[in-house]
Length: 89
Image (cartoon, rainbow, N blue to C red; front, top):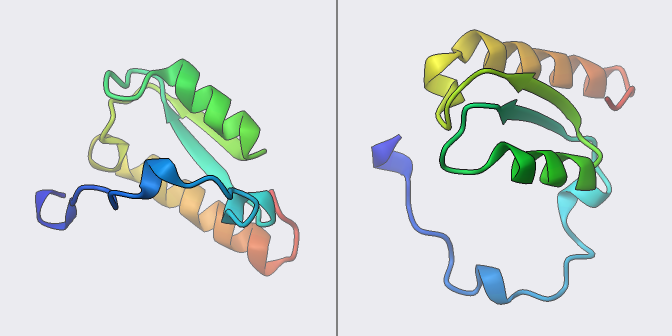
């Protein structure tokens, strides 16, 4: 994770036009880490609801891909299968 992590683009928080974001027109899935101490779970819930995401909650920290990789791969597989069938979410 360290090798691929980088700071966000400097203009990211200044953008005003959010009409073109992918989650407005594409199906989304969200894994909510209930034990996250980096991004509060209530904020995660708000973001998931706003994007109308299929949400899976699990008892995990911020790095769910390390602590619960089986959950992550299961969600990826379910999302891919739903999109292939043309059945978002």
